[in-house]
Length: 332
Ligand code: AMP
Ligand code: TRP
Image (cartoon, rainbow, N blue to C red; front, side, top):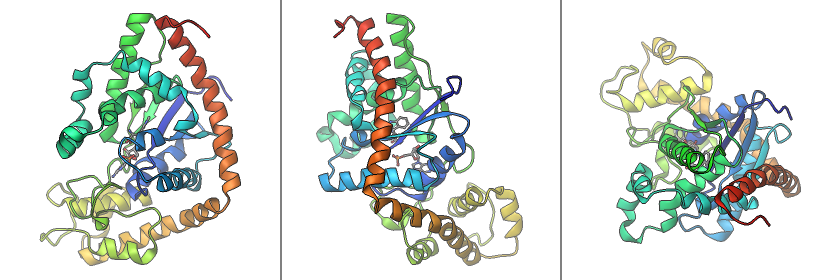
């Protein structure tokens, strides 16, 4: 491993089936980073259990997310791929950082505010502390850059605040990470409510396209996508549904929205929808094939996550020991 390479850390929760939002907004960009950076890509199972998961499903989805990472083109030889719970330092560091985090800071997190509105007083305390675990994930690897969608930016800012505070209190310990928000595919919106981001936890399955959705399901979902009554294909905030379809096309094909609107100046919504569906199908088919093959080879997947955990444990433990020592815990 080249010591001079900058470090990247990111993770996805195995809390549902991944959507093309995860793929276009996260995975596809990660693939481009693997040669230039020393990357840690984690399946954050401990984050997923902040809401109740069915144990068998959680196990299955954790392996699925790992298979999706690899299927999307993240090379296990070049990157460290691992499961969060296999590196106990994440949980341990989370406690230590929690002792240096304020209730006020955590209460201001929009994701928490949204969820607490939904669940009221019966919201789990882990949903409140969730960003502290995320900070541990990132800080344990001397991470330089964190590729995340816009929605995670606030959590990253909190991570930086926690790290800076720790460094000021106990002397230089953590590297201060930067967000890395890619331009293309930065946010894919719901097909049913295009003002909202496409989310794997949405109650309406027509609002998202899953990476594993078969072609006929993709065609049906795209054809039902909410549009507008303007009747002309513009790339505009007044036409959020159409804008989202253009973004999907743009991000898969690597062409600009302007080029797309020029192409469609004399075409209708039905044509756009059908082209979007076929483009998604073409992009996902080889991926689905690879993922299915990987999931059929549990031994291979096991060898990947075990090797990954070994590497991750090594790095994370070094930093955790440093943190424990600075705080004044007696070395073991
Ligand atoms: P999540 O599905 O919330 O665990 O997110 C995993 C990663 O995928 C994060 O980096 C998110 O920002 C990204 N992501 C999730 N949904 C979308 C979306 N609709 N558009 C773009 N990126 C997304
Ligand atoms: N909270 C992130 C999300 O919901 C997932 C995550 C957990 C993460 N730990 C991370 C992302 C560390 C980047 C770095 O998308």
